[in-house]
Amino acid sequence: MSDTTAARIVSWHQSPSKPRYQPPAGAVDAHCHVFGPMDRFPFSAKAKYMPEDAGPEDLFALRDLLGFSRNVIVQASCHGTDNAATLNAITASDGKARGVAVVDPDISFAELEALHEAGIRGVRFNFLKRLVDDAPKDKFLQLAERIVPLGWHVVVYFEADILDEMLPFLAAIPTPIVIDHMGRPSMSQGPDGAEITAFKHLMDSRADIWTKVTCPDRLSSQAAPWDDFVEVVRPLVEQYPDRVLWGTDWPHPNMQDNIPDDGHLVDVIPRIAVTPELQRKLLVDNPMRLYWPEEMG
Ligand code: 0GY
Image (cartoon, rainbow, N blue to C red; front, top):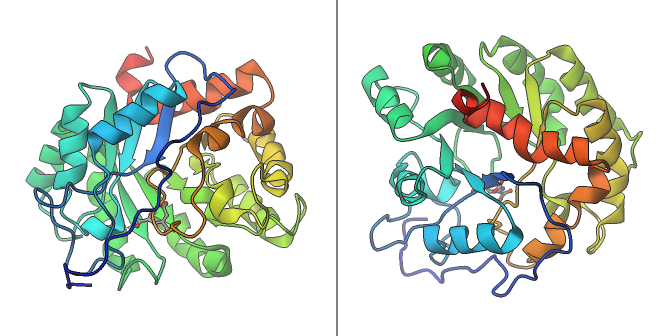
């Protein structure tokens, strides 16, 4: 979408509620994005959606409202491979944010090192056809080899219908892997459904696959409080307590027709991670191990 006069979309709640659940000290929102501001950070000519500005001030105000301490900012597809908006937000966070970049696979190692210096700790491979034009597995694997010395991981976004065809690619990745939104399994199939079961087999295939137990608003077939999501995801959190991450997904790209209240999203946490220990792992220990390992001692 190169037409910058196209109507810009608002996909996030304008006055989210304060959650009833209070996250533990040091909690990390490990999946969120920024959009623009467009006058400083134009969207990609290949962007599939054209959002209103959702910049760092709004992200950090939400962080504080929800009771979180840090953010992991994932480069959104609308910004293509120019990570300037994400880096601007990381810089503005005063050390309270790190990021995941989307890069041209031919990027130089010096540029990767500069991204590391700026707070990036991983690269995202996006396989959703409605978001990106191509996802070259061979080039992604070469890039994954090149980030090994940086200690980074890869974040992979795909939907359940292509899990099978993703398996050889995922098995070949030489770094830890984080799967966005559990690979988007069906929630209406229930906790023993074929899609979540296939996803657990993937989790069992390597000890260094992590996942984000995120996006009830995207995945549930129900309205809030998303009981079907809780029923499917709670057993996953209990089975893999050291390999799960949580995030708001703010500003909820493409959710303009079903905008979630971020306070309600936070109130799902104690229903999927039902003990203080599970909550601490999900919100503090696990994301800190991936994004701020130097602070973990
Ligand atoms: C998400 C989900 C989506 C979009 C993006 O980068 C993006 O544009 O990730 C989506 O539309 O499903 O994780 O934010």
